[in-house]
Image 1 (cartoon, helix red, strand yellow):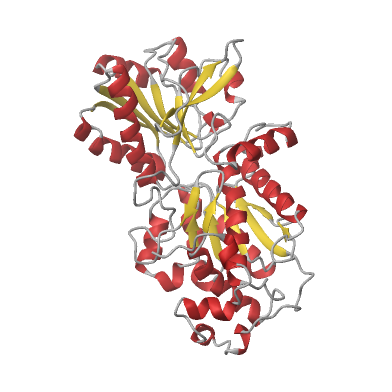
Image 2: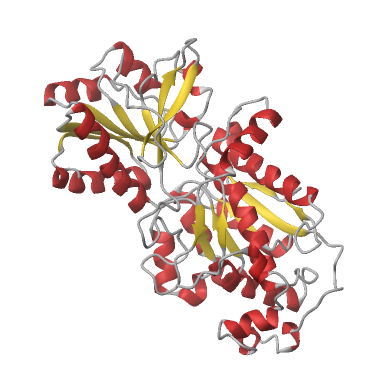
Length: 455
């Protein structure tokens, strides 16, 4: 897979030259019946029209992760527009282009199509929950608009790109997929639970959704290969009341020495409180979307202390030179929950910069939306995103190519094994004054604290 090294090397390249360099030439427009006239440089056309980007995320009941997604997009928008350069002289906007999926697999694709067709966005960022994101892909062959997924992990999306590139090439993912998250969970469990705490037996506690089922199945297979036995395994419903007493008792009776959890839609309050009050108070690691929020410590009355959850980035450590400036910008701007960024804040912020760099690769800003040229430009944007090499808040973002194992997913590590985009495992701790604190305990490259056992 080819990657261009820096933005400076790309700027000023005309779209015609870029496409010829990729071997696409002038024939790309013919497949859409747009002719070749759409491919020449077009500076001067529609220069005042902002570049429109849609945001698709669940906002029902002020869902924290959805709020975090929107906030990440607005910070990126405002930063980009504050520079003299902007995006090849054009402003970028998400104003009025945020749409609520409502966790509904019927609504999500409708909202995407509205953004693409009626609003004429250049691309859409966002997405959350496998069950609502997969249906969005069904409209891509028709609307042919880039979708940068910043919140959904299912590998099925990337598999569609692999199997039918022409129809699904518009799909890219900024965050990591379920395979990477589960594999890294195994690696983390071996490096911390097993190596540092001597854990040999674990209990799995997973939400009964697509991610939770995939997560549980993978761990049941892979943990034993590394010498960690799964002695109890539970799926719990994603909504409604649920008493975790039986799950906790089963784990204790089975001889489990730690819990591995997956909370996606459910906030996990009940589990955390019952774990603390009833026990067994074993180490807890895993996925907890709501558990990344700074408010979670107070919401659980501090009972989440010692739990370790995967995150994309954190204010606890400088993943890149962009991580802490973004974190500080977020916390200084927003005073209502979530007052610190969740993982989709980081990935969505990065997604807008990925789009910015892709437009710079093409060398010309988009033509007026609604025109045939604009449709052609959205086609060309795919090839440009494939060439992106961007150091964002979550790491260095480079996408796997069409012939790679997972096309349009981020490359996790480079050829030398250095981390590009990897999970960061963050533990709830307290500082010297007893205030809530979050520290990275894995991987070693970003670790700034030892793994602390439960109180």
